Length: 327
Image 1 (cartoon, rainbow, N blue to C red):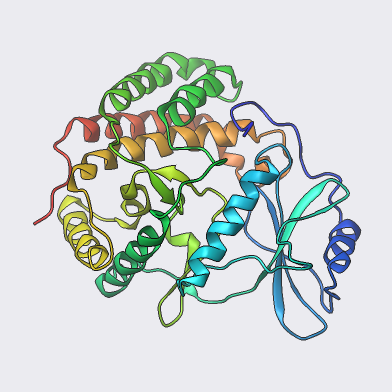
Image 2: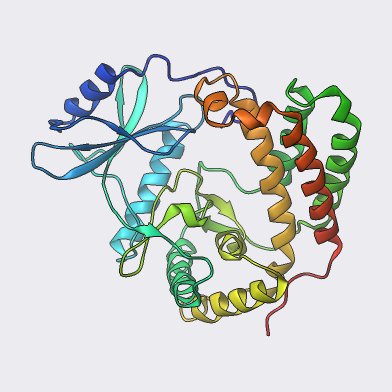
């Protein structure tokens, strides 16, 4: 994956005609307009086919994942689907799930509906623990050969290098920002000591879970190897006491299917720090894509970077606190 360097590709050549031609090249006759869904890393469109069913076409950002890495994502989703776990897997045409049209890799998915998972609903939290346990029960059976592993190098060191090069951080804030950033990076490096890695959803936040009579998992675009806690900690919300209740609920349900290593609770705050730093670097790398300044105009404002300085200070304090425990 070449995500550690600045990408200039901006999907400029992916116009409506190309999208429609790509979809129809796989035998799907579009009977509606294209509805752009909320995705910035890739380009995702919902459409109604002539069979009156709704589908989603996902066009992968070139130069991000290799074909082998995308295929592993597809195979993982299908494997979970085969175990009756509600994960949206790509459809196959001519026994293929990954297609290419004029240089664009794309896939067709069934369209699923539902509302967002409610992080403060303990009943839903329990469901999530159970289903993530089922996912991990399956995922432990194999390893990824092509997709990466959560690591300090990519999510902290490479991200810090990207931020050092960006011109978006006001010069007046450079010293304050990089002073606290380096403190967070160094402490996170010391604390992030995962003992084992399994195949993960990788980005299991509420926005990637649709709820209708239970959860449906979508968007395995960031699946990779890593510690099991990565698929659990983003379920947490509220103060430390509320998070403790939520984690206790998650783990009890999770262990109906998969043993949980409680030592991984110590990885929650390092993983949160890695996500914070990686997110800022991701926006910086993608800034040359016209969709990003339009969607995230605040990223170039001094106020945003002032807020990040405060957020990093809070996270540095959180890294120094005792890790979350179960009841």
